[in-house]
Length: 85
Image 1 (tube, rainbow, N blue to C red):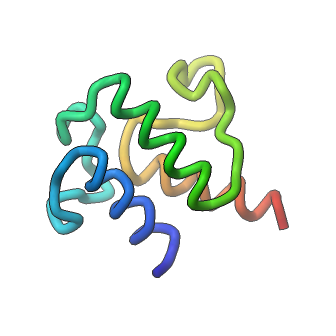
Image 2 (cartoon, helix red, strand yellow):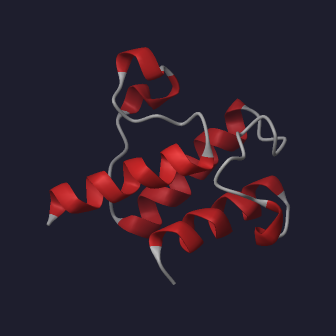
């Protein structure tokens, strides 16, 4: 399973949806994920990928990790993984 599929699976689980219902264009709001659900998703993603997402990820103006859509979350994870290694 690649990064995209793993992220979609994690987000779908948090949103209580099927993975096929989560697209790269989906926003957390589209998926019914509230701020607490988003935090839980971030924790699950950090654990799954052994990364640390910047603490201020919920304020895109103060962070270079964008959580505005599934695609931007995937891109951020790919960048963090590349920086790791």
